[in-house]
Amino acid sequence: MLTTVSVLAFEAPIAAVFGGFESLVKSATGWFGMVIIFVYSFLIAFALPGPSEVVLAAPLDLGLPTWAHFSSIMLVSATGKAVGSVLAFHIGQEVVSSGPITRWLRNSRWDVLEWSENRSVQLAQKYGYAGLAMALSVPFFPDTISIYAFAVLERNYTRFAIATFLGSLGRLVVTIGFFGVVAALL
Image (cartoon, rainbow, N blue to C red; front, side, top):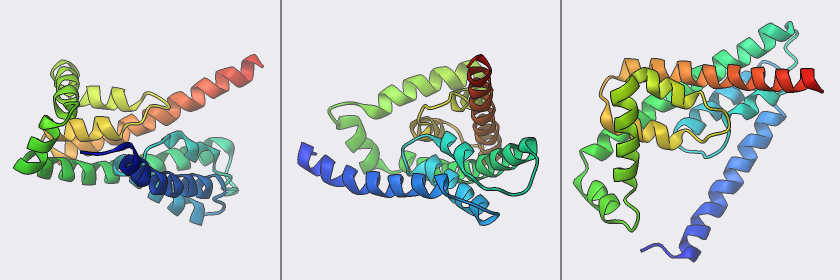
């Protein structure tokens, strides 16, 4: 059973690593910054909690027009997240076939699997892969849980990768649109 101390001991290093990656993205410059954005987006998909929208704040200074600057960031980020999601998908498939892990999660105090399966089943039944893409398009919502929950239910790697790519791209487009509207109002 996890105690508060053991949870905090686990969360502190994750938070330090995450904060370091987020800082690295916020200071990424030049074309190497695109590599940093790809790696960050890859890790956000399956390991790091937090917002993927931070990539839009990277001061890359690529010498491109504004539309090309943001388009490049969005495409690299969506690709990184899609690749990371495929890894999460594979891990999710392994968890499904792993009896002890599944039993432990089902017997935990909060049945995470039942809750996420119920939500994901509803989403998958109603909208399929488009539902995953829509869920991933919601800005500032951690999508790692959605990715893993959906991965447990589905089997098609290609469709999963496409849905996560489109959802990640959609999230960044919605974010830019939101901040564009806010900036126009101010």
